[in-house]
Image (cartoon, rainbow, N blue to C red; front, side):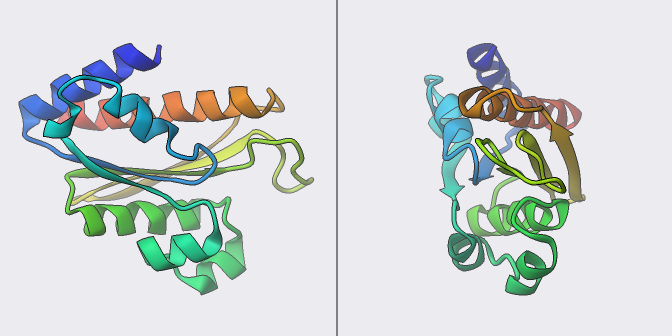
Length: 159
């Protein structure tokens, strides 16, 4: 499913004259890798940000330490700031951000498989949270990658 989504993303972005950037935590660059697996992706993808630590989120994307302290890295508030920061830093048309608990582990309040997504354009930012469940680390990361690609494709269809 990943390659067809990434190919569709490339086709739509080229047609719209749009550029795409990513800000990833739990996926560790998997979304950027899926996009750049497609020949010609350099026409729409200049950079992605892998911000696994809170320090990286703050330094590279401008996520507020206060937001991290108040809500934790796995929150819609943080992915909102990640997406906004990536959009600004890359001067892109659209940015997607991801932060989640791939596992193993989690807590009562933030269980394994919970992933938050942010999608930023010049019009604003949307966020959502999906609880994929305890599918195992690799599967949660793959599901999160595919969801991020789907969010980008849906947004690019509207441009």
